Length: 251
Image 1 (tube, rainbow, N blue to C red):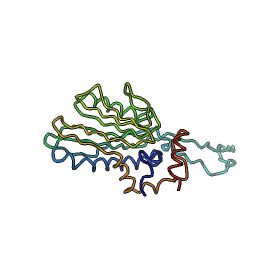
Image 2 (tube, rainbow, N blue to C red):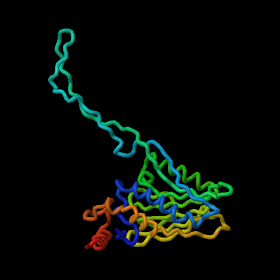
Image 3 (cartoon, rainbow, N blue to C red):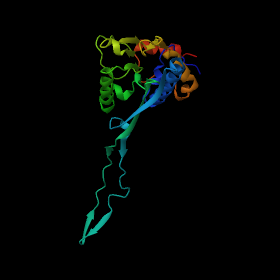
Image 4 (tube, rainbow, N blue to C red):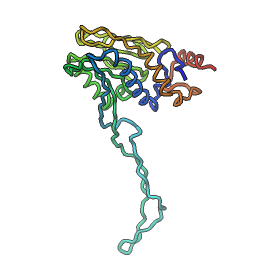
């Protein structure tokens, strides 16, 4: 099935599906740019791991005794009633794995550009955001270029000054232009804009067609099989966008 939306598909933002979308997009972007930047550069899929208490799925129930409350224990000739324990949940840290792309120069192995696709954990307060913000600051104080792709309507956007409101954002920060950067803003009813992949100044410019990448991974990954288009998207849409989605999905 083809992506039924001309731009971002809001059903892909569902937290239960997003980790698959994120992984597919990482591979898709890597495949899209690999041949265009070779042989001077190569792209690799990297991964950071951390422990987090933020996700509600990390709560593990403690099983209660299934015996009745009137069980007795003989102690020193007296009869004591065992108190039935209350079932509680304790927070258990879970391992979070977030993928990102690195573009390196083959001859020098120097890191040229980092490509990040934000996750829900990056856009809410907690360990995921703190770690990503620290990495973001570190990149922005080096000669490494940064591309930051935000395809999630929910959560708090990353810090930047002068940015207008929009559903989605693609930030292209070239090291030589800082503190200035290019921000590509777009809404649900718009196509995803192309954006440049910054490399060394003497290299030919490479343009990333993220819309084509999204459409391709949606089709090849059969992401439609994980979506119930009879339901409204989650996170919720505004009234105008919801009407537009329903019209678009009419048989």
